[in-house]
Amino acid sequence: MRDEQDTRYLEAADAYGPALQRLARATEANAERRRDLLQDMHVALWRSLASFDGRCSMRTWVYRVAHNVAATHVDRERRGNRSQVTLEDIAELPDTASLTAAHEASDAIEKLNSLIRQLKAPDRQLLTLYLEDLDAASIAEIIGLTPGAVATRISRLKAQLAKSFHETAHV
Image (cartoon, rainbow, N blue to C red; front, side):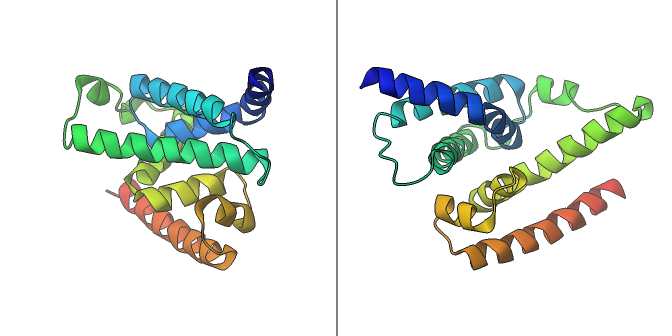
């Protein structure tokens, strides 16, 4: 049984490892805590595969486990660090005077990730699944909404993020 669990984990980690990294990046800004979050996702995934029964796709299972770990992480961080800003956080702020086109693109991605991290957990989860190119039906299966509700919320979130993104660009 454990060999089967290990095999499933290796296959899932190979197929969905980059998506787990993107989810961790969208959830946690601090690099060290992001590595811990990613490790927690992998441990939870491995443990969960002992009870995987195939009633849903492996992709759905992996995303559900990872998003649950991410939601728990966010709740734990909010309780523990209500308003702390570390020197590392300040040091990581970009120097806008010396940004090149490549840095500007990277800055835009980080700004988007920052805006996504500010969303409430259910909206953040929905949007990160959308950004992983999952369709509304797959997202609905993972988070427990109807496909129509998912599509509506995605549309609203995209409009909200676009507005916030442009507002921060003009400040």
